[in-house]
Image 1 (cartoon, one colour):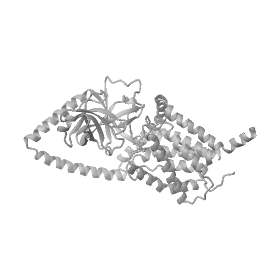
Image 2 (cartoon, helix red, strand yellow):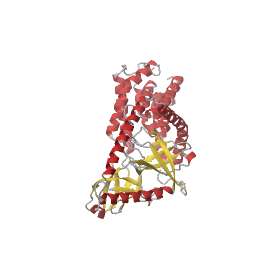
Image 3 (cartoon, chains in turn yellow, brown):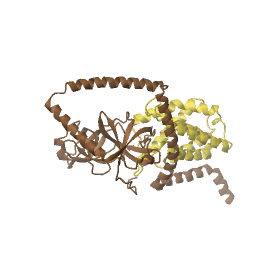
Image 4 (tube, rainbow over the protein chains, first blue to last red):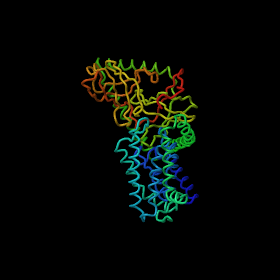
Length: 170
Length: 296
């Protein structure tokens, strides 16, 4: 994993999270339902960076997202969820040939489900004030995120931010 | 032996880093103190809110120049709706003749007058919503006034809808430029309220979701004799956070507890959260920010 590419990925992720909090929370397509583009970016960066890089990417991404999108949430919560996803995603690097549409979509769906499940577990704990919201809201947000996944993945591939078909040296 | 351990460590280094960061994030979750959490949030939010405010003002400028076609179309639509509602209100006023209707009109005017008097004890700061959280785990929204204009933590927030002043929520955090508002449907939101008829008191708590009704508990069983669907619920003023007599919502249902001495009611918030834009922060002149957070 190249350090310069890693920093470039982090900067891109920060900018997207920042823009997502400003522009997209106003109105986009459906009022208040925002596709989580920063989540898609983090996922593919984590897969691209391998297990170690993916874990670190997840931890830092979870910390970076806190001031932009989670004003009243517990610090460390998204770091926990994202580093978990980052580690699992990093393990997938080089194991499959990633096509432009289906496999990225599959990764995103599975990662979204795991994240929702982890947040659901945390919402059951006392003293942690998070609320998942209505399942229809989650479904709409998930649908919008999944629709954008192939577009975002191919943009990242085109800008050489990710190259998921490069095998890791063993 | 050392070389074997070393080889094993380097082979599973990814797992070690994963476990280490997992422990760090769990420690952050369970042991982060409110002042530490607020410190990092303060720093991030202070930087971000500057840009958010600028972007919001920029958007307002674009709208006012009439370049944003969608908002212009929406304005025309709203203008038409307002004209229609004025016409219907005028016809309603013309037909408003019976004594019973006049009595309720006088009673309502009296209540509003009292609230207006109560309102006069507060300094009112108008505010605009500049950001809703896109994360449903902790619903809140950001307004464009902060400590610079005198907004303090726990200040009540109201809005005007259908010519009524109603409660929206309270300020949970305020930095120099912006403030974060916790709406009254938030799962951590709670307040003392009073029913319009019978004057029974209860505890109103949020459901966590803006389309779900609020829960009004610890209401005396006797209240069910006088409760009707659509009865209004006001703040009781006992908590000293919210002024008494602020409209909160209307009753939509009742859950009977056969054994207990109390009943539980569902209350629909009066404010439609999808459509509010302008809010008012009420600052009582002798109000002081609490030194210590009891319920973070």
